[in-house]
Length: 123
Image 1 (tube, rainbow, N blue to C red):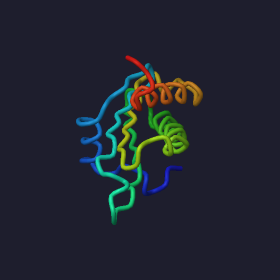
Image 2 (cartoon, one colour; image 1 turned 60 degrees about the horizontal axis):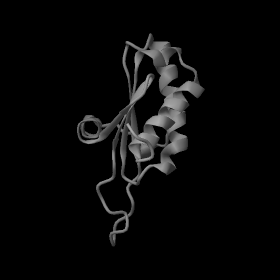
Image 3 (spheres, helix red, strand yellow; image 1 turned 45 degrees about the vertical axis):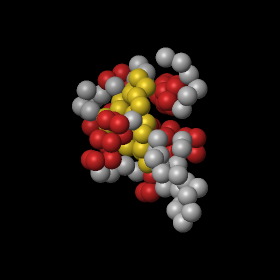
């Protein structure tokens, strides 16, 4: 489970990450990343937590399939929060093929997208 302080809940936060962040697409998912805008070393301020949200539409499958995909993605993102800059907003959008994919395939696509967004890969 993703801790409460690391969850995106507000529509405005989702919109900020999607509209103003960088995007990396993979066959099973698209990851939007808006890096933290505040300086974590500024005096008197603590580093804001990285927050993540998920978009899984009906194109992925029925309710059971969508919820299974969301659970898998939450688990995968939770393990990767430490790699992301503090204060970042991450939105993971599952594509229709994600419903048939297993956790290992989702992990590969998520890792590839995050590597590209964090500057470790070329287009």
